[in-house]
Image (cartoon, rainbow, N blue to C red; front, side, top):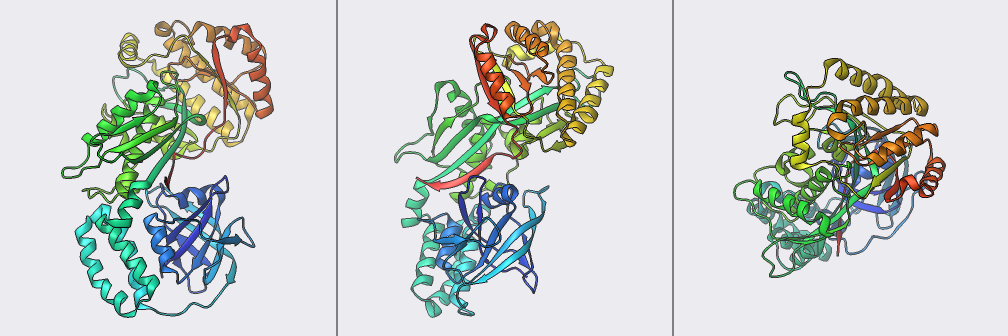
Length: 529
């Protein structure tokens, strides 16, 4: 059976999330099956920490506020006994649980959890028609992005009688709040106006493609990795009162891609759907044309935030909005993934990714492998004086290249699938470094005629030779560069290398940063301003 209640979870930084949820439970309450969407905070937290607390409560006002994103303050809690979690002080009973399995191949996940501790705070008052009606109304309100407002209001009209006849002050308050939310009026409207959706994602390293200029079979593909920095951190909220167009608050260097993504998203909304003007604030961004996947990550971050905003604002559309929109759909809507699917898959899941390439010109690369990457840091070196190829220059460079020889494709696939993936699976740093360096050398030799050498930037070629002389093997260029990367075994080695580079004249005029593998996809969170 499905039992409605409230789940508390923490993220990796200890921040509490409170969410209404109806897990499937057994008669003994020893197992819970939770089915959050992949873009929900509950899913991300359970994926990161593997534990949480399920509460049985008769506080329907809390359930309603949590469902509508209108928790004005964090409920009082105390520490759980068997897990690193938080228990709501006003719950009736609580069930501390640990995740046993997590299946996330679909947009809605299935998480099986084992109850490890049960506690009781007070008696459950018993069956109550008004409270059941409020819970049903709250569930209906979260679906107005799928059905529109009128069908929800019609169903709520049938629930109102139970609340009016059998409810107390808390039930009437909760039901009225839900009605205002569905209508977009009063307190609900002001809450919507102050609501923010925040999206954060990392950057992408692309180690190289498998097949270029192929006359048959799959094209492009390749292997790459998501890293935690530099990254995108942007927030979407309602535009200023009276504003008739989107507002963008960002560094001038990323204004154009932000505005382009906004425009393309709006252009591809279903017939009859519209979204009020929004305000986009960009707190951090990926430097463009540095080989770090800024174009795809920016477009996906903007479109994911708009999809979530569209869902939370209750915009009626002809397709699942918000949590149901996959990165692949967002990429098509914003014109990304023309060659590589690494950045799209990385936005969804993070990790080390192997892309089998495109079977059709307008398709998106097929992800065939995704691995958790060990915490081996990457030292990134980016020269400031010359960006990597993009746009027309990139297309022209591809046109000058002959087809990649089939034997080179075979060699690259072997290095990626057997040598690199195998070493990563076994956490063998030395073997992974050798594979990464060899992959970069082989790809670089193919691209040398159009980029001037195995690396695009002459300063990076000199630095790479020096680093190899020092014993570093996991060296390469990401995408068209000019960023050079060097994989090192741990944070101490990364600090030592960055200090060494800071003292080298050969690295003058470069930005040097350390990044760690990012094994999770983009995060989406809602807050109130």
